[in-house]
Image (cartoon, rainbow, N blue to C red):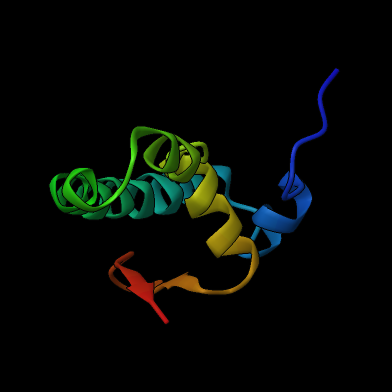
Length: 86
């Protein structure tokens, strides 16, 4: 058994207990994070060692997205379901 943070109950509270909305919101944000990381990867390779890059890549974009949702750093517009970064 593993311990997952943030807890699913906390995440569901942020999306009015709609698990499909939570999945959509997290997937959209993870996609944005992944795009951002890809754009910075080339520059990072020039400036950092392989060990430093590996440490920075330990956390997956989806995990980062869930953490941002739990901290209220990502929200949505109920009328359009667009992801908004704070």
